Image (cartoon, rainbow, N blue to C red; front, side, top):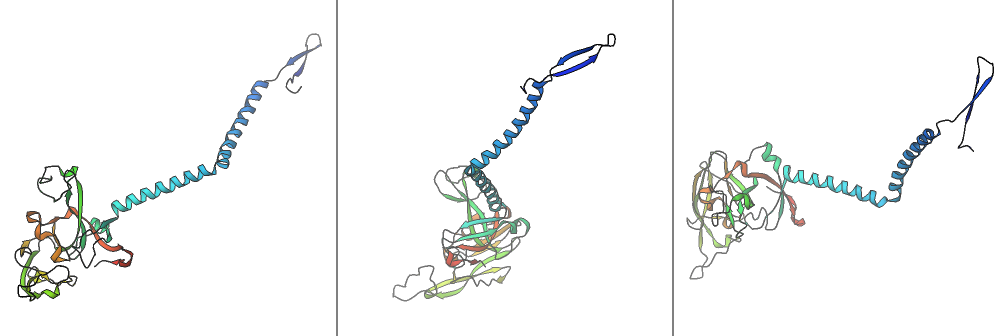
Length: 285
């Protein structure tokens, strides 16, 4: 009965004084529609609450996706703009950094600061060719010297060495004496034909005519003028001269020919910390 509500309207007839009765039906459809709209809104809100309440696993998955997305963006930013991570594959930096060690370097140091003498630096050495998997030094042709594959199609190769010469420095490596074979432990020194231990020619690095004190060397630096050459170079502006701490077992600027300097824009980061292996964690000097 409530669905068929009617109104009775009585009007007086001005002429005859009689009352005229009119039956008026209210706009029930409009009222119902408004009620339905309100019900729909409430239903939608309740549906959303029900989804959250009925699917806590979905909510948790969404939360984890957000966490991983933020963590990924943060890691990308840190690794590309703040720190550099490198693994030392060889013994060229013994005993400062041992083979297989992993290190962190600060990109910010070379973004906002200057390269300093004795920095241990991560820098772009050259590229590894994807055709023959051979590593090569950066060169004026900007391509693999063996097959001609362009640098941009190959993988960048990074080295870690100690900065010895700054722009404008005069660097010399001279033979200055000999050392007994027993003083060497990173390189195998053979015996003389008569069974005696040989005297090995050794030398010193000079920077602008002054002998450089290198307390980080674990053994004398061999300088025989052949496999271990003497050096006399001046570092050009915007470039650096780098050597390994294991001077007798390091492929460094002494062997890079005309490309024996590292350009400023190839300097990536200054190494500060060794973080692997765990028993060798510490600052790098």
